[in-house]
Each structure stands twice: as C-alpha cells, then as structure tokens.
Length: 276
Ligand code: GLN
Figure (cartoon, helix red, strand yellow):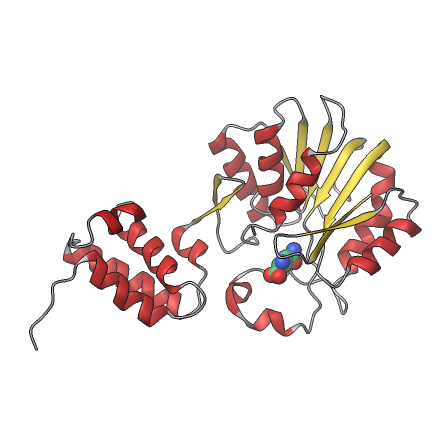
C-alpha cells in the first residue's frame, strides 16, 4: 500500500472517523486548528496543506484524548459564550449556549441604567461577563464557592477588560450586605442519581457545579428563599434549571413572595429558567 500524505483533509477524515459521536468533523477541525494554529476555514480553502510531523503528533494526541471522552472545550482551554472567548478548565462547568437565553432575558428587563447585579455561582464568569459586555454602566458582582472558579472568573473578566468584582462565597453566606436590582444564577440542578451524569462532557465537569441533592433542587430552594432579602424593591431573580423543573421552581418563587413569575425556554424549546 502506498502511503497517502498527511494532508489536512486526510487528517480530518481519519480523525472524524475515530472520534465519532455527535459532531466528529467539527471536533476534528477545532482540534486541528488548535494544533496547527491555522483557521478552520483554511482547511476548506487549502485541504492539501501538510502540517509538520510534530504538529501531526500533537493533533493525534488531542484526538486520542477526545476519543476518551474529554470535552473539546477542555482540550482547547477555551469556550465561546455570547461571542466572547472564555478560558475554561476542569474546575467549573463549561458554559452552554442555552444559558445565553437567560442573558438575553436579563438584558430585556426594565432596570435602572446603573443597576447593581449579582451572579451567584459564576463558574467561568460567563453570565456576569456577558452582561458586562452589554451594559458597561451596571455594577456587577459575581461569586463562587470554589476558589479555583473565583480565580478563573477573575482572569476571564480581566482578560476581556470588564470590571467585575469576583468574590468567594457559598451562595449569599460570604457576601457583603447589599441590595441588587438583578440576581442571576446557573446553579447546580441535576439530581444525584441522574444517568445524564454518566454520559458526555459532564463526566469531566465538577459535581459541585452540577449536582444538587436527590431532586436536583437543593441549591435552587436555598437561593429562591434567600434572594428576597438581597433584592431591591422591584428587583428580579433569574435562575436556570432543568427542563422538567419549571413547575417546582415557580412554586418556590411563589412561596418566597415573588410576583410576575414566569418560566422561559431555551433554544431547544425546553423549560430552562424561571424569572420573577
Ligand atoms: N445543563 C447542564 C447539563 O445538562 C447542567 C447545568 C447545571 O447544572 N447548572 O449538563
């Protein structure tokens, strides 16, 4: 058999074959782009281009890690959210596109121009940073219970030039006393025994960012009950939750005295967050 040269196109076809799963070609292109430093569009414009043997070895190592299940975002060290490049690592949840629906709803609220905003359990800082990118006059605080997440969110905000105060706090417990016009959160909300936890990217994400008790509602219960004391009169609380938790979360809002309670859907038309 004659050896066909390792062109970009051949490397991509072989890698996509090995990777399988939901988006093998896209995964392969992202990893080859990472290894070569060449853009994804260049692979279409110049499919016969040949990377050096060292680069090919690096690419194959990334493909092997992907085959073992590691999330593409971890292999790239980066994930785009709200068109902003965020650094990611294994210490936080990888930002999901569906959370952009919560950002959109927050931006559509009727809030003061100089609103004070809090992002609870900020992880990479995704929600806080997206809001800061759209509303430079807002004062935005963010917190996380994990020191590694506080560092990551701080680094992301700083790299993109947004003045967000990132604090270490387990929900409200470690925060300075203050009232907010808007509180947002994407807390853990997966049930302990959910089989979702055994598949795909979540296997490589921290349980502290995903799992919340037997029904997945432990943290949301605590957040909704505590939030009124931290909100300005007429302030808003927006919390992300599972597609099947809308009824339960609306009840929690009602019990805590919230009005105008409403559940909204994500890009896949599943219930995804509740506001009030
Ligand atoms: N939506 C995420 C998932 O299904 C969970 C995010 C979370 O718990 N905050 O993997």
